[in-house]
Length: 269
Length: 269
Image 1 (spheres, chains in turn red, brown):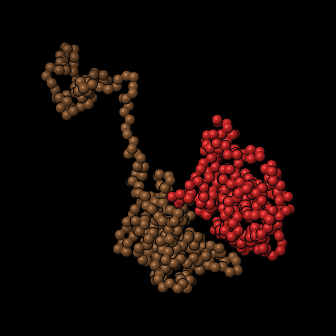
Image 2 (cartoon, each protein chain N blue to C red):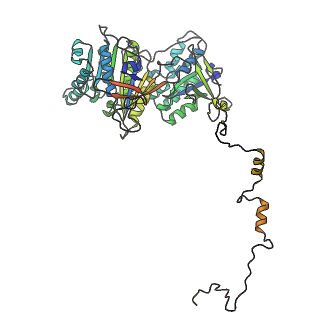
Image 3 (cartoon, rainbow over the protein chains, first blue to last red):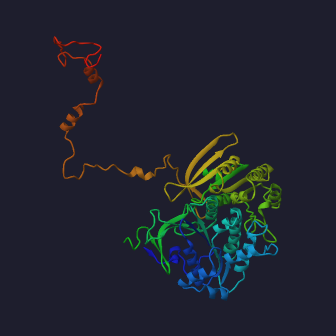
């Protein structure tokens, strides 16, 4: 069974976007950032208003990847469809600033007395609000675990995601996609694990990327566990307390990703 | 027992529903609400729980008995109310556990409440905190995935005022109209009931050679005594000396000089 792309795996397409979803992406000793790029191109092609908090890469990096997937980020930004926060550039500006504490700036938590992410949330609120030709509103975050390394507490990040979910998913009926990365050889492992568990309780769909348990393979880049909490096959049935799970393998190509059931890779069959 | 606890037949109770990322307890919480539904009053602590906007409706800092009593007495009903908290984990992120326990006890003793039902995500907190909160509760329902895979199991522990503790495990499901049905009780070893249907397969059937024994052959096999399997009679017969068997007769030669201290004659004296 070959599922050509991400949309068909999750059951939505550019014509039909589910509303009010909180999609949590996570990876453990693997790199799930390809999923962020795919969601970005999917939502832009579907005509959504996208607010993208790019905290780990520069705009030109995302732009280059998006071009290969058939989407022009520069044009989308100029037209107002995409609002992009370039975390790397802004944070340097914040740290080198001579002036008074600027709580109004999105990355203002790096300096200054505020311990919560209120200013970042205000930036998101400003970016996704406002009825326009682009709809629904989408928030993409790449990624939340980098905030932990910047000294933000797990509680502050959870409060931020709670407020984003209230605004984006419930008030505006849009979607939210957040990435959390967990490594296995870091000293402080409690932070990312706790963050991941708490966000898994809040989300409606969770995609976890891992390397293959048997090791590196040239033709299969890893496995993904898809967990539907509120929708998906059989979720409305009895015993809906249990999340519906599905385990698939994937391979990343130059212009896309293909997902397939375990053991059905083209290299094997 | 699960249905009794959900219906809430006793007053002054404090019920905690524990869940994990594997199995969500929110549906059970919703069925508790449905069961207590003589009058439903929702206090919106979801939109702005930390007061980040100008006019918060209900914040987490208002979780004290004075404030809650104001909200409760604001309603026209004179009957004591059921307080449902979704979720206690959220409150524990913003208040120390000791304070939360204290306030819960104050609420229960206040008299304005008939019952308190709370949802707790036990994998987000340390065991000690979960233990302390459950110690305060009169009933604890833990929701875990069952062995059958499709159903969830509710492990209910109830403490009566006399101090008697009862425990029960039941498969349950929650329908669309939020009624709970209890399916059955899982067996002690958690074996699925389909094992009773399996029959022993006869290995000697459908072969090209004969592995079965005739009656005469079976009798001879039963009679055969194995060489190293000792019964009591055989043992005692072997241990006692029998006449005519294995005797050693020694006639010393003239040159034999039997020295009892050196029978082999090899010590150099």
